Length: 609
Image 1 (cartoon, rainbow, N blue to C red):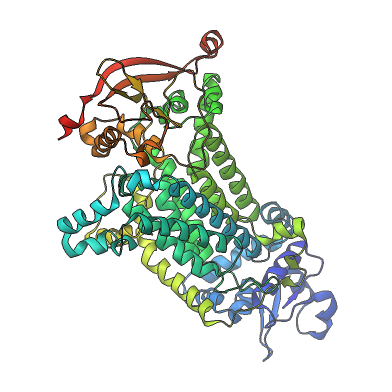
Image 2 (image 1 turned 30 degrees about the vertical axis):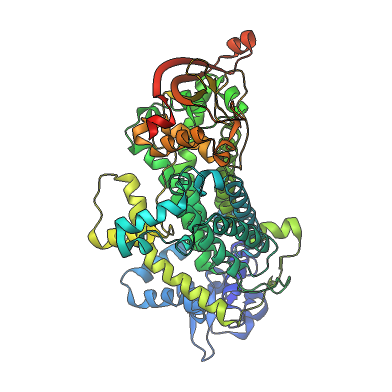
């Protein structure tokens, strides 16, 4: 391949082609070797690149580029299209001619979009830090659940797993095993639930330190999926299924090694990178589009943040301050959120600098969401996915040890496990791409019906939480209702159970519990949107309080009956709203509330029986 050494545009792209073709093609500047080819006019060297094959055949322009890239199997389609697809050659040559006549402008555009390095991006550092971050997030998720699992689904919990699974087996028969894939079919005892949590913690630490990362991810996905299904309503959140889907796809990204070997990193699977980028794209685009297709006018008129800060499940103090901001700023924030979620994700597939811009905006959005609300490990997980948008060319400038001028410091893997992982990831793309495309389309057309084939395939994949749809904040809640649970020994003197994080006492400032998720507090927010008849788990919570079950009582911040269980329990419904800055200065209260009436009438164990 002979190119004009005075062309800065050529200089940049020749480096990319050199990386793609490796040692199969020699590259020389025309000023050095042009005299060896007297049959080629010197003006031709200035107009286009020249490709000379070993048999002496000479090609120029786009044809030269495509023929030189044939040595890579992934690029052979370009030369094939040039010779077999009608119009492809003429369009390619016209496009090449436009660039050759405007090389200085093309060089400026290249530098604007890619920077100085247009070589194919590699993701060795991104993979390393992404897997560490994912291990940390799994660790947080398992520890957060472990400290409350006895009160939620333990044998003395609100919805015991040992009662749920046998009941599901009776109702579903043998189909229960495929519809509810969980290791808890072997055992749903408290000891086994603790084993799953403890095992998840151990595997998370292995992943953080890079020990058997692929095998660790297999175990993490299996353990967390098992707990998610056994956890029923308490583990039905979108970040739970997002963590499982991310963990599953990361199996194909992780090296199949027992021990980390710095400097001998196996190749990064481009197929796995594509799958995880597609997950990030799907998460953001669906979350943005469903807001506009949900029928909620507050997204269209940009008033959603007039309600969000105080109506979200677990606000923070920063959320209280954000609620005091002027109306124009709230509307600007809503517009920015919609742009970042709907438009910016398309830059994930763009050249480096646009991709980095997308990364920065997506991370910024997650930080602002995390600052104003307690969304557990969701924001950390979304930020971790954004790490895969930062290729090694950026880390090289910061760290100085990932790439050299000759290329990336990595070895080509000869391990069968690595090759099988790449093939398996390709199979996953073939099987899941239609489902993901249909899920994204459903965000734009919510009423569109699924075909029987795709619907059946999605039902099977959805049971394992490996292909999911997302739609955060689809409809803005415009009224905050809170349930206050009270207990009494005589039916006259009533004392409240105080939750650890849910709003209750109006004088208590909104707390900050993320990335921990107090799952009972979260479910109380959903319970207030309906009646106790629509939330059987709430009635079970009341029954547990009447029995004085210590595992359930431990989920609360304050137990008004620490010695003996209460005789009566009731629940009252209130409307809550943030105070204004002036009201806060006068009273010191963070909330103001209005009693709406009875949520659950006074009950006793006799009534329950």
